[in-house]
Amino acid sequence: MRITLSPIRMDDTLLLARQGDTLTLNGEALDLSGVPEGATLPQDAVDCSWLASDIRRIDGTLHLTLLMPYAGTASPDALFPDPIEVLADGPIPLPTDTSEVLQ
Image (cartoon, rainbow, N blue to C red; front, side):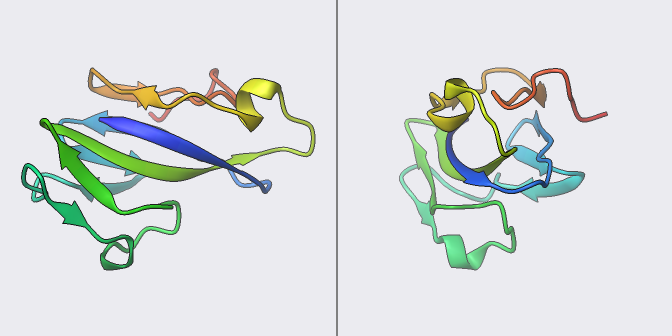
């Protein structure tokens, strides 16, 4: 899974985790297993306020962009984050606060 982050100034918290093709955002599971190779799932077909792009599967990897909240003062890593390559199941740390993980 390749997640591009789009920073946005807000006080909300985003907690992410992956289990196979399911992405969990703040406790809400988003099952992406139905996106076949080479297909695009339009953003407006997904009920997820954190999603900021269509979802594509390219060479077996899901590609998507998520909004990433940051506080009033944020590090350069939070303001200009690199895409995240999620290779394993489990919590996905974000550059805003790597100490918080989804339980």
